[in-house]
Image (cartoon, rainbow, N blue to C red; front, top):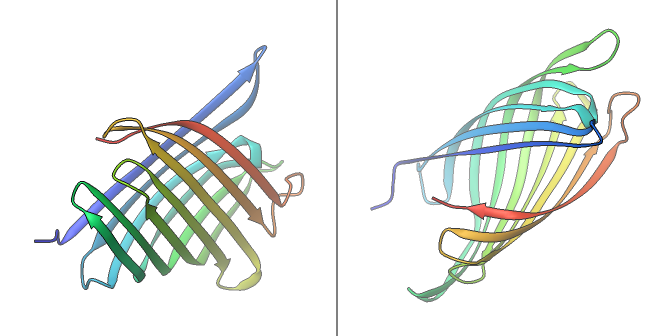
Amino acid sequence: MKKQYYNFAVLDYQRESENKDLFLNRGFIHLRGIYNLKESLKPELFLQKEFSEFILLNDRYLIGGGFRIRTLQTVSGDENNQHSLSSFLGIGLMWEYEEIDLDPVKTTQILRSTNYVSLQWNINSLSRLNIVSYYQVDTKDIRDYRVLIQSSVQVGITKYLALTTGLNYRFDNQPPATVEKYDLELTNGFTLTF
């Protein structure tokens, strides 16, 4: 029997300095709830809080919802060595509040369309590849849009611990004046699942 609801949370905080000079300070928390309406169509709600000194973002709050549509699902192998490939399309709306660290501080409240395509390949019981591409556009100004592509490869060490490599690309068509439109980030670390 499948669960009627499922939820997840993502928490990320990064702070790095060298010789007392702070060059990275950002944090992110995302909460999402998904309702199993049908196997291929699932309503979802989410909340998010974020800050990043690198892109002059003092605070960003989001609340939104939409639909998660399964576009692909394949499973092969046996119970001990199962392989799967799945893909989803997400369509929704979100209300966004931002404080940008300018002089004076710039605040905005925007209703955005939020859309994503995700692909998850479970290579085996311990290793997987994930790619999620987001497209978010202001519902009143289509020139104000952002693209975010997050990809990661996890190679399992144990059932609960994996080595993770991530590659993220961020593009903002209308960033604050002193911030680049795009950013590329490569990360390495460990993922703990419990």
